[in-house]
Image (cartoon, rainbow, N blue to C red; front, side, top):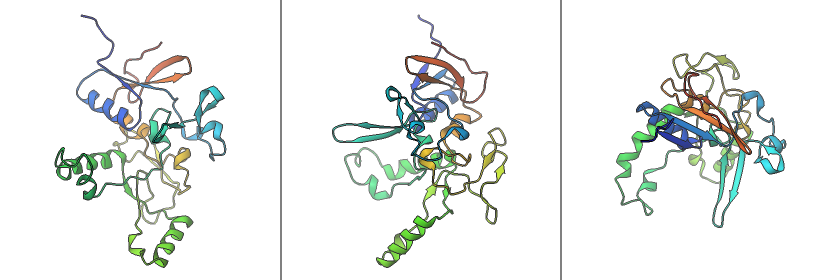
Length: 247
């Protein structure tokens, strides 16, 4: 029987890939994660999407950012190209579907989704550190006034976000020791409400997968970053003792 270095190879380190790698690792499997994009630090992110060469991923055009769009006949896919996948560039708003979503559509008869899904959403909420957004900017307040003027003010609500927000009465932007993993994770800073979630959080406040699932103390799956034409060495998403692979 052939001997392999890993039991599972996970392609992509986004929400699907990181979760799969974590759960497989927890079960004792040897897992490697391969990612097309590179690893980004807070100080590497562009200050604005006008710096599109650091935002968009189009290597053939010398654009080596972390955001990509794929066009198909009936749909356009927006996704990330970085260690952490779409969590690096998504708008950071997390909505739990209402019961009516599970009661309609072709999937309605496949299972009792209203009984099955809540536990999984609670797990995701816990892992991503989801909280109610308390940082309202001018656009939010304008939307609230517009809703009230239209007679539907009751429909305005604070969204749920995966960001480290300042305690009541504290100024935003303050750095705290890791609040999520018993001190094993990196220091975090509270959200300043800059609105730059889609161009990468430069303030260490957004709970991307590189700061939550992939640094979970139980996650030891290494992540491979790819440059056009070759695979770079894999680095652990958790501990430096994880196996490495080069090509």
